[in-house]
Image 1 (cartoon, rainbow, N blue to C red):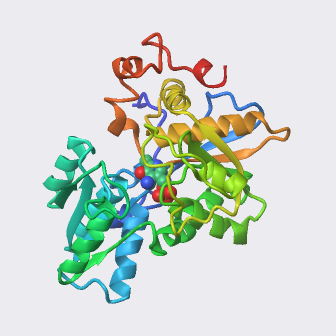
Image 2: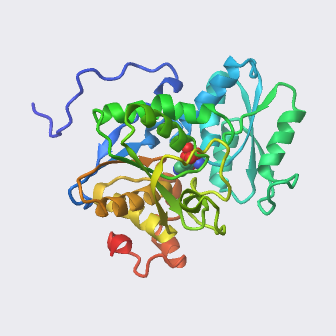
Image 3: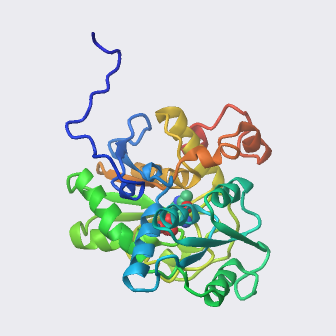
Length: 348
Ligand code: PMP
């Protein structure tokens, strides 16, 4: 009997994993076939395939293992971090697998779903004020540092200053991309949060493919594009895209290899993520939308065909009640007609 599917098993399926940690990394690269990129080719690195659901599983594992090797983290020790985002979920996965306690300091504006998810994994969640800035004792990063200092056997993992964060991408994400594209990568498009991905990929490609261009996709309101182009930050605004854009330059962020930078509005990011879902069936997060919007602008500005890699840091399932919800999109003024959200919103 012939099965009515076109799927055929690969010659060597991956071996059975013992626990989730060996499943971190080695994520798929998918070529987009429906979006118009002229004569160029667009490839998405699907970091949502990591077991914790995002690109941050990689640095979470690398930072914990670096602390173990340095003797800072002993069995039963406590990891402290300030984040409600994907880093928290990645650290929860790693702490759970390795038997560490995890305390996350989370600004109180973050979604209840994330807090419930983390608490259900046994994470101690300390909620703190969202309306105070750096230097205030209730500012989430300062509070995490204080908690780590006051807790015996605890370390503040601090992704913004931790060299193991970019290292995870230098030794993992970078080599994977170059091997998947058989050594031919013209450009990599990505957003910057901690800068771990950009810095790690920059270091790897500087050594192994120095002609590869780096394209920064920066949310409107973030200072990073101005820092790249004018060497000085402009005014800080606010944006709805999650996980990228900054109001400061993180200590580990090396922007020196960025060759092109685009400011992308929330409307453009959401339109791109929605177009990706509609055209290709791929449900990706809002920062993927930002990177994809920048990649389309970059591709259309080139005279020669380019092989372009777009980082897709997480899945769109975290954003179903926001950018994939027509009512929310209409309430926010992003779409006039609830059924729109196609490429005309983006490059029209
Ligand atoms: N996208 C999402 C959804 C993220 O959570 C993050 C991490 N903040 C990034 C992109 C950016 O990654 P990085 O911290 O390596 O700059």
